[in-house]
Length: 376
Image (tube, rainbow, N blue to C red; front, side, top):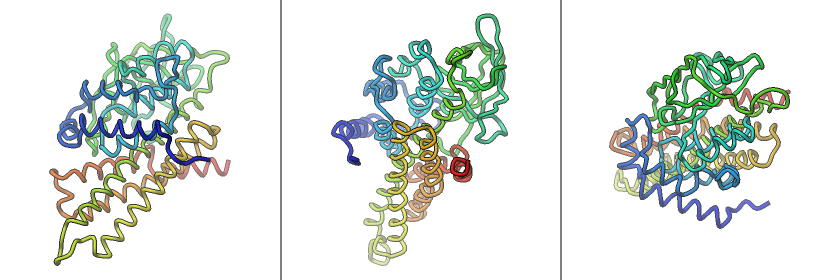
């Protein structure tokens, strides 16, 4: 087994890092997006699409690159290093994965080309108020109206819904759990931005009142296992969040080490003191272990069966939730008082990792999911 990145993957990494450094640096670009509910500019989103990274998971036949999650991992880690805001995970991972797993050939032809080219921004609406991370029995419902469907319900914590053109929404029908495609600008859809701790991670509530929709996969006899399809998309989104966190944590570590070499106290660089060295060593351990788990989970999304994919995703998320958050907290400790100030960038990484700590229910729910898999 070859654990080295290919030449193409290294080129992809260098290209994305250069683009983000030139077109979307932390200052001023990321800071300018903190108060923007879309979290991106048209120019930067178009730039990512022109690089081809929005269609990495989309098959060649639908205008994409036909690659896998390991290639996506390279991009996601770079986006984390730059604390990049915007709907990349929501669209290129969540929406694409949901269409590919729950849809049919008709859905592929209608939806995937736009998602691959970046002309359509998508997101997945799974969670509901007071339901934590449970998505299997949504209160949102859908009923047949004429030749189509009408949806009613409320979704919470929908990532990048303000920027999205396409919402992929789970709902209950007479057949059970289903996934529906809804246009954000259609009648009966109300999207309202909600505040978050991390300004680079945009969320919104979505209220559906007889909103017109179409059902992915068509339903009926021979339809896909919807719960299994959603599970696959959820796992890929979880792995994507961990990979983004690995990138953010590795950059936070770099910033802390650079500062420890320069900042002097009692006539010596603070990096010479054992207490600071211990913090940095703990950060390095956490980053490397989280990276190993995240890349294995990315591989499992491509090549393993559903059970192993779920196990790998749960393990990666359970470890990263607390350990990568602690990397951000340790970085703040190394910087001392200046790390808490608005003017310094390290607090942006801390908030990104704080958000990761609670994603998908956090460590506790990830461990519960892992225990269910192992004991079932």
